[in-house]
Length: 191
Image (cartoon, rainbow, N blue to C red; front, side, top):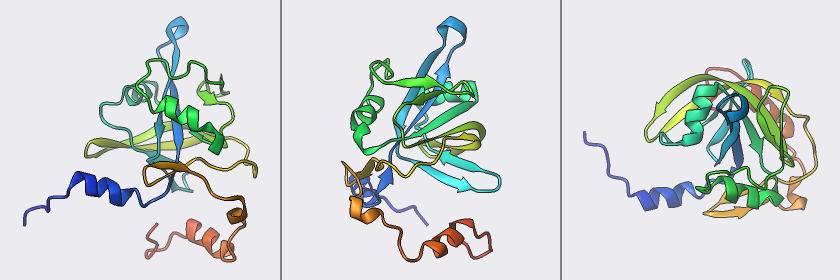
C-alpha cells in the first residue's frame, strides 16, 4: 500500500493546534579562547523517562547548533518565561551570534545557561535516532535548576506566542491522578 500524500501546509496547521512550550537548547562550540556559546530555539522538547532521567529534543539535520552539541556531547535546556519572547526570536533567527545582547552564564557543568529562564536542565547526549528531516536526540539529565513557582511559560500555539492566564495556573482537582499517570510504567501506559 502506498503511503498517503499529506499536504505540508495542512500538516503544519493541524500540528499548530497542539500548544508547546519553548526552550532554547545551548552548548559551547570550540575550545579554549575559541570556545563560544551556541544555541537554537526549540519547541520539540519533551520529558522521556523518570528512571533513568531522560529528555528528548528534535533538531533539524542541517542545524549548526546540533552539530556543535554532537561534538560537545552535552547541552542545556533553557525553558523560556513569557517575557523572553525577544530571546526566543533571537535564538530562532539566523543571526550568527545569537548570544549577543543576551544575559547568560556558564553553569557548573560548563554549559551556557540563559539568565531569566523558568528552569534549566543540563544533559549529556545519550542516544540519537533518525527522525525524517530531524534527529531525535535523547539526553541523560545530569543537573537540574531549582524549581520555582514564579513566572509563566512562553508557549507557542497556532503560529503565535501565547501564555497561560494567571487564574488558570491553579492545579486541577485530578492532580494526584496526573502525578500517578506520569510515573506509572505498566504495559498499558501510553505516555
